[in-house]
Image: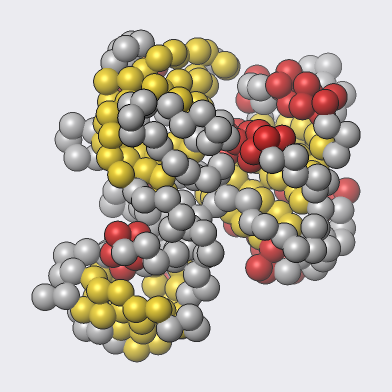
Length: 343
């Protein structure tokens, strides 16, 4: 039995199947609900249930706390409708611009960028290009039905190839395969594009802060490439944080971009600085606050570990005056996060 979902304040409606989450139904019917991991771990799809009943599946408390649940909030990626429902959620214009589809992908290159990070280049069918926005992600469809998500690290100019940055997670069912047994010319199955993390058109032309931790740099790299391709003249300050210097695995690439673009400024930050490091130390989002205590005229794009993204959103909006609707984020979730959330 299907039910009707009404989204406020837009008034848009869509149907959801008996065994389908609200988010899955919205993606299927091109309704632009905000979302990230789809695994109940990041909280990006959080919305308020105004009317009706839902069954809420397993999720992490950092994505939706018990206090939030008592206030009527739910996660669209974990909620299944038991009746017709009305939810409150601000839709993302353009999130449904390109259709989600499945396709084969051939591994064309595997390159080690750091001890625990590789760049994987995928070749896609020439007759069936993948159209996406810089910042979005694909999912690998594994033989046992499990899915693993990774952001494109290149702008969508070359639809026949996509670049991914993968960090090794010891014991992870997918990254163990990538680092130890996957070979060039292997054929994989992917689906995408997914996600509501991408550059917004900004009539005010506000300066932007790009904030990344670890491989959260991947979609940020795609955005920087897109800005170069489209001659976007907005000012950008990139803060990229890691524990050690090797975590900033494309440092030379960023420095080359800065040399070629006077509107791009780069601030690397290490939390466990190597001997001889003369740069910034500490938490990367705190470096932003130290440099830019007033963010009221900025837009922020953040990607990385959920703890970093959540701290940045909280502190930037409550202490630095950043408008809540000027913070855009994608919280990366690890394989451990997915397992904890039931994914």
